[in-house]
Amino acid sequence: MSSLEYLDLHLSELDDEIPDTIGDMGSLAYLDLSGNQLRASIPDTVGKMVLLSHLDLSGNQLQGSIPDTVGKMVLLSRLNLSGNQLQGSIPHTVGKMVLLSHLDLSGNQLHGSIPNTVGKMVLLSHLDLSRNQLQGSISDTVGNMNHLQGEIPKSLSNLCNLQALELDRNNISGQLTPDFVAYANDTLVTLSLSANQFSGSVPALIGFSSLRELHLDFNQLNGTLPKGLGQLSNLQSLDIASNSLQGTVNEAHLFNLSQLSYLDLS
Image (cartoon, rainbow, N blue to C red; front, side, top):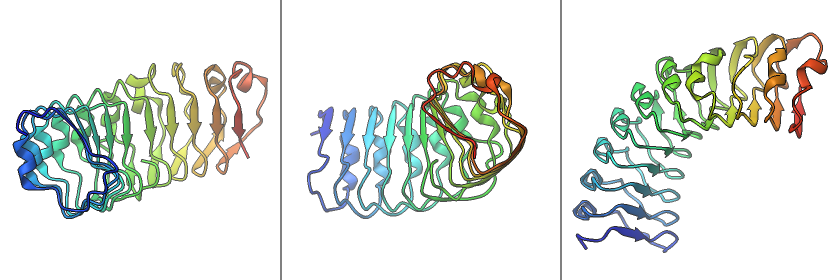
């Protein structure tokens, strides 16, 4: 099957290991083995599939670490390894996949810090590292339900196509400033930083014209609610509950939020 370009075996009740010989399928551009019971580790030979643009191994029982060789799949635009039992750290080689738009490593047992090289994936629009055991400082890099620690990474500002940034339910600290996702001000739709340890004031996020969901609840934010939030005319959901905000909310805060359907400032 060396000439095969498309292989979709998702939900096929596969319950074996991924063979090393999978790397011999050098013409493969699309591979979906999700929703099976595949076990053992991801073979290093996956890196030989250099023409691959879509790889989905989610929803299996894969163990071991993510092989460094994934960085050889430089044409990859979508990588989904979520819902497995993968361990170890996220390899720095992920930064070589500069065409990647969707990276989902959620629901594993990954630990260590997020590599700085994530900031090189400037086409990334969706990043989910949720439900892992990631730790350490991420102050120089870029989840939903991790154990991340450290500060918002500076290289997030390189991700100019980012549409969804979800880092909620972690232990991320530091102050929020609009410039950490400044280049994504026209594209960012979802910003969810709930249940962390962010401090300081609520950022005004002026210019984030596409933002629809802003969730900053259960942090340590203080000060007053910036009136600039009232300029986010596409905002549909705003949750800043369970912080230490002061002052009053008046018409200037809400006047232009005609799309708002959910608001929690309790």
